[in-house]
Image (cartoon, rainbow, N blue to C red; front, side, top):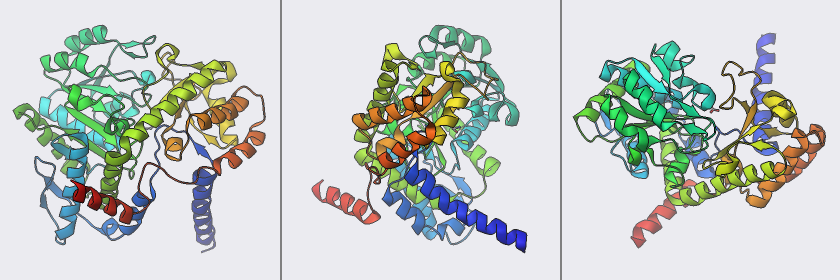
Length: 449
Ligand code: DSN
């Protein structure tokens, strides 16, 4: 019992300590994380019975519940259907699957479904070092779990984007079943329109991984991949989309080609890769969708403005920020080459000592096997934006980062300023403070409509 007691105490203490450390004392700049409003947190706390329940079965072609294999589904069915419909309304599409437990799960189901539908095991993707997610790569899910043959698109390092002409030739030669765009290091919109025709010509489906930029798409501040021609959008619901951890897939049921694909993707969700739906996250997905409908435009604008401000400021102060000739970024992230200051590993660790949390990152010209000490760091501004950072706050934050990166001050010294500065940002903006406030808002809107 002694071992058990010690471990249990440690577990509980660490859980409390973590909340204080990352939420209150740190400045969080990891581009794949998100922050929840009080209303999203409230609905998550409310859903503890849902968290206990099972609801496995098939969906129909609207993404609604078709058949569930357990009893007790009276309200669960409404919850699943409403969450799906809110997502469809927000992204102006007629099909979704919201049952995925993560963005990687959304990729798994989509890649598996489309490789079944096309009977083609080849997928063309951006190279990992150029920002593709590990689940797209032959070293990750796509290669090692799904045994897909992965062929890389051509990437133009100067343009920090996919090279359209060379990639058209690659797709024509490879004749894949899937072409996947979208990324985790994602500074500029990908050429969806430009690669649509060749993708269809070879009989492939165009997938766009919007895990990082889903909230920016909802806010109209990043390319709309469905409008530009993507067949499927995969995403997570907890990055710039400010909901609970999880994933979703979007698409449009327009013709037989899409019907065949949607059916295969749904089969790849259930029964191939999930049994139960993680129900307790669904109401929170709906609350986050409403928040993006109401506040998404302003939130996305300020997020991108903050990222661009940081890019410009760090560049003016001597850092090699990527994309200087293009305004640094059109998304929530920037990438900085810090080889001159010891590389990504050293910089990320020293910033952590100062309570500034970000991650080392491969840059497009890195050897993709050098993941341990890549040239760069990736900085995301979605968390600080929601906490109320404006341009002047971003510049002060950049000064603190520059102190650490350029060895001007010791991280422990900078940490004192970080703790003091962070005290000013103890509210979450661009969201509702409670479910009551959200309900009152929609009632008012209904009355006025
Ligand atoms: N690995 C995450 C990222 O940081 O981009 C996404 O899953």
